[in-house]
Length: 403
Ligand code: AMP
Ligand code: MG
Image 1: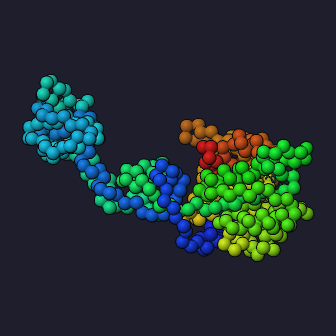
Image 2 (image 1 turned 135 degrees about the vertical axis):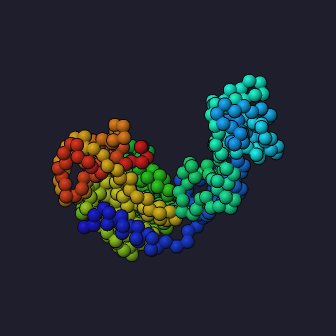
Image 3 (image 1 turned 90 degrees about the horizontal axis):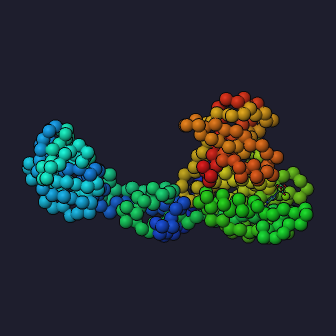
């Protein structure tokens, strides 16, 4: 059985191998959060476009300002002012943050280090060339590439695009992720479940996870545990880039997902991973569609999506597969798990200063959505461990959607 690292590697290798040119779409910078850039963005001018003052103070010739020097203030320069007059020798100009430093001046002295009396400005300390000035072109040259294809667009990337006037961005079309729940007991969330039925919460978490990962969820509802219904709905799902199924991949008599996929021509790269929860997770390909059969227990579904589906969505967007957000934390309370599988336990991490401390939450196993809803991370217990004492350092997998 593959470890979760091996299983992730397998997903990454298969999706990388299959990757062809992807469709792109023009998106307004206002709407492009979470898209992956499919073009290079270049500067439209130098940055900064003029020698920019970083302080409120006085523009001076540094050579004329020793401690105790006095200069006559001859001008006031605000941010946005057109600056054409060079600074005369023996003079200084009052200048504001973000304003252009006039030719001739090579330093800005902070207002806090000056005393003014009428036009006369006295400097408390010596100035040195370049002080409090960002030189023209020092952040970026004209035509320099500042964002490249494959970059995920977060708020800073979008601000940078906006700064250079790139108001429309060519992005990868988000991979379409078909979501199909399975199970005779499952009813849609707007229906009232019978006494022995449950609502389809998995489709909700899967759609949210797909969206967070940069995919476009396509909701296909629920299929009964019957070959004909599964076949119909799986065939519909195979029209999309990725098909994610929940349920029906265990060893039960009515776990028919793998059989139906096989009949439809799927090939499988793995059908079990050495983790708990999530052990029966299946990954394969049918035609051009990547197929993930995730176990139906809600926490299993959520964990296996994070581990295996997210990297596929990254790659299909033209971005590198993100590393798992694993960090080290101090274990707050001892653990006693059965060794043999890597455990992903719902847990809560708190930062005491910069030191994270983590505690597993009480839970009733992989059906316990409430435990995960109170968790902000998964505590990862290595397969060869089982018993871990309080105070030991353990890896945790952050839930980036709530941290
Ligand atoms: P399965 O993987 O099909 O054996 O399902 C395992 C458990 O997950 C069962 O208790 C199911 O009732 C539950 N389950 C399956 N599908 C869903 C779903 N769409 N939403 C919530 N729970 C589900
Ligand atoms: Mg089932």
